[in-house]
Image (tube, rainbow, N blue to C red; front, side, top):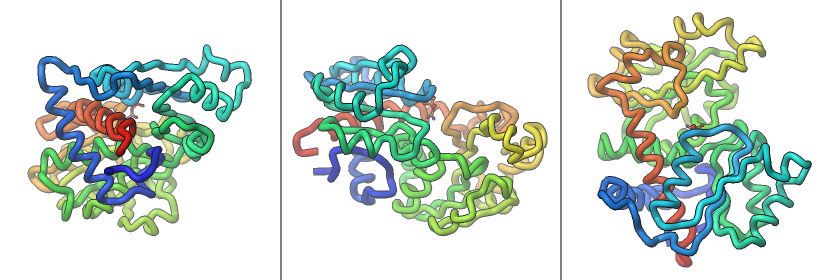
Length: 307
Ligand code: CP
C-alpha cells in the first residue's frame, strides 16, 4: 500500500516514502502517455469529478485527460452554472456527488482547508487541486518528478524559488515536498511577499535574488498575481520585473546546467523573461506533460483497493 490516507490534501502530512511511491508510479504512467495508444483499463468503472471554484487550465485539464487515458468517467462541474450558484454549501455539494457514486473528487477552492472539509464529509477520495494560500500538492509532485527526471535525484540539490512566496500554495507544497526528498530549498522575493514564518519551514529566505540563485541547480519563478498590486505589496509590474524578475544575468549566478521552471500561467517579461521561458534550459512544457503522468499515478493509486 503506497498511500495511507483516502485523500491527498497536501504534502505536509505525507511521508517521503509515499511521495517516492507516487513518483515511481508516475514513471510508468509517463511511458503510457508516450505510447501511441494512451489507453489503459486502470480506471474502468470509476468516476472522477473536477470541482473547481477557481480558474484553471493545466490542473483541471490534466486530471480530466488522466482519467480518460485510464478509461475512467470524468465529469467537470462548472461552479458558476451548478447549484453552488444557488447557495448550496460545499458539504452538501460533496454529499450530493458522493451519493451519485463518485470515486474521486478533485477540488480547487479559494479557502484554505476546503478540501479537508470536503474529505471529512465524503466517502469519495478527495484530491486538493489548490486551496487558498495553503497547498497545491499535485503541482509540487509534478515539479519534483520533473527535477528527478532531469537530474536523477532531488537529494542534495539546491532549488531557488523566486517570487510571491507569501501568496503561493505552489511554493508551500514544494517546500514540504522537496525538503522531505533531501533538497535544499531557498526562497526569494520582495520583503512584503516573504512570510515572516517562512524560515520555520526549513528554508533560507533572501530579498537579494542573486544571492538566492547562487549555485542553484533549479531556478523556479512564481507567477506575480497582478491583483496584489492593489494591496500595495509591490510598486509596479515594471519595477517588480527590474528588481525581482528572473533574467539571463540572474541565471548566470546559478550552476551552468541549472533548470528553469515555472508552474504557469506565466506573465512573460514580468517574473521571467520570454527568452528564458522558451530557452534550452526551460522545463516549463515538460512540467505540463508530467502533470498528466502524476495525476494518472494519483488516480490509479487512490482508486485501488490496496492504495
Ligand atoms: N499551475 C497551475 O495550477 O495552473 P492552472 O491554474 O492552469 O491549473
